[in-house]
Length: 414
Image 1 (tube, rainbow, N blue to C red):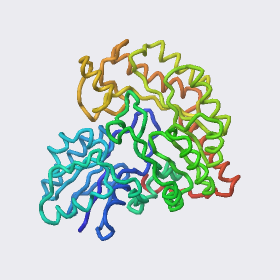
Image 2: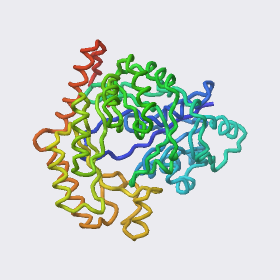
Image 3: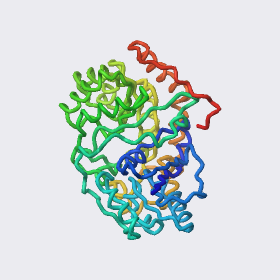
Image 4: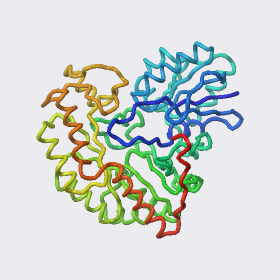
């Protein structure tokens, strides 16, 4: 039996340097497929999708809302050829009723422990329209090492330099942030993987640079300390979402190879200022993630926020527009107030204004979004700032003897 996993293309942020990270959802799903099943994989960002093959099953891995329209097109095309299609992933769970109109089957939930049932139904010609394992979370010890062998690894590079590989050390998130759908998807319970399993997976990855994609590492102080102590001997260099602002934890993170973190900057308070300073004091870079269009944002607020970002000397900044994704508190509130402008999912990229802001027009918010990008990077380009972060990690790797010159030919597709 052959299963073809497809990761549909999605539009990148127009102001962001275009690069492609190896997607995490498909390799986690592939790890849950029995070894006797032949797997092929197409990531439309780096591969050309061909419809000339005839797999026994096409599995669409759909992460983002803006991937949904393309996923539906792919499903329709394969089904017209008589190839059964199943869809899963984060965006499928957010849009499952729409996806059910295009795919033969829709999978809701986490894959571990459930794929065998789907394959058995496929063999018997009895594929169900819905496999609802939503919040029927598998035992976290079932989560194994992702199957990265399906990736065409050389194609994930930036100007010939190999990008990070993705890994997760936990699932679930005890926080309930206003614009986020994680509470709906993965639940409020923090579910850490056994640290030994995380270490083993990190050791198996032939890349010294990793992105720990957990929603937040700052969910359990003791676990966070134990994790950093355990991975420090690997001498990997890694990126993550927030870590705890605590002296011991920051020191352990730096010793464990923390390269830089994504830090939400939602105001100009001393709390944020000090958090950024403390990270940098520990030799950890900071990429600010800045959400524009909240109900207290007007033109002056955004200008002052950008001035603040320059003042605190962020290494990088990524500006997005509040986007009311399904099953978020922001969606519920904006829908109730009649402030959703449309449901053209292709435009739900976090770079377009798809709702009516409270204190300005949609056009003005779009203008201020562009202002933020242009102003922050006016004196030092995004590409140069990224290069500085890479130089920083190369210095760290040289110091501990882990630096590898692995430049990939620029003749390769990337």
